[in-house]
Image (cartoon, rainbow, N blue to C red; front, side):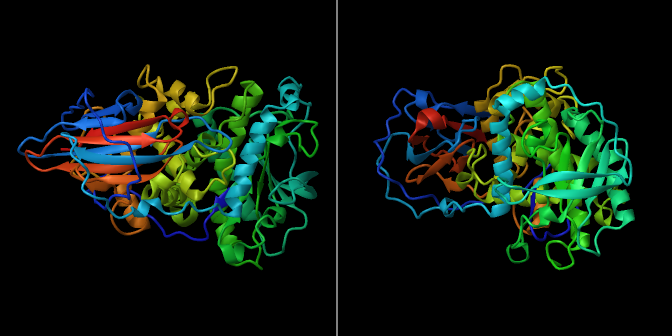
Length: 562
């Protein structure tokens, strides 16, 4: 799991948000076909109403009616409804144009939107974790995984404090070579055993540090994860999850003092396939240790701050591998949803852990602040960021922000547990199914969503998610379904504490005629625009043209704000 070098403290509120929408100019317009919306049904909405429109069935058009004397305002998102991961990702160039509904000619073009900035490559730590999730998916399809499902566990007993064992640990971020680490059990509880590498730098974790960390996982974090996602496997038959704390994890980030990013810990599905080369034949996590020679990224206080949210994050990955692969007999969960759930696990830790167990007596800050930072980054530029990232993506922090934000919104739709959403998360992993869950990605999301809206599709869910992102910024806005707001966060207030200022989503704004924007629709994400009609203004038509439309699955999501 990757962490930034620093973050400001937060005092987080848990109510609904309210902040005015802001506007910016549209993007430049490529050559597009003449707009022709003859015969397309007008989308008429009451204030607070929303609709999902398929442009492939409407000649690319979205038609909005003429405004009444008080005027009207709509939030429109042109988005990709693709919810399944592919190796290289789903994307397609788009052109979006606005005209009056008499189809008059466009009046020139506008300046390029700042949202269309170059897509930045991921830093190495994100690439490492994305590589592990891709390897997990490849391993889940291998004959070894098929054999591992039916392999009887060895009759082992839990370790005891002072017992020793060897572990094979990734030597590089490609994890194609391994190093053997000798370690001693320093803590053994009912659910976890903490091992410390016998050759870690001096001046590191004290016995009290290890006991505090072990008690936090054993007595709190373990229960939070298993309640929300289901039980882990027990392939070694000892009833214990092992955590190895070693400077071999530190060695995976040799430049952390200059880059400000470090691999804090990880889980690798190979360990749950007994007998395979380099497998540790059991449930194992890996974490870094303090290193006085690296005071920026591996100071003792920083390690103690980062390890607990890392462990609850990686434990979800372990549970997921069990539910999908060992029990479900299918592929490992798609990375975008797997990461979204693990970042959601961090939030669950922040909401439920005893503050006395956490840094500065503030668990929500310690566990959840990173998710807010990542989500803020995503909402500053949703168009250039995948929600459903490619299998080859490095897993940027901005993508992780999108992943967490989607899972958080989905959990908010729970009819029985709107704060924690554990009924939704358990469905996402098939936690109550004896045979696990074979569905992954968008298919798993749709299966879980039947709890609150039978018959719903990923297309509708993705559209409602994007409208919720925009709805968070609408002053005084309410809508009858309750699905277009985040119920568990006051995101505007929380973001303001991270980066003081307005809500970070700034849609383009237009009254219709003369609007032109162009860019790329990426899997699950979209481009946002406000259509603001003055009193008695003419009807408006928007025209969307998308390359690779069959894969991208373009749609409009439209919400009437006033």
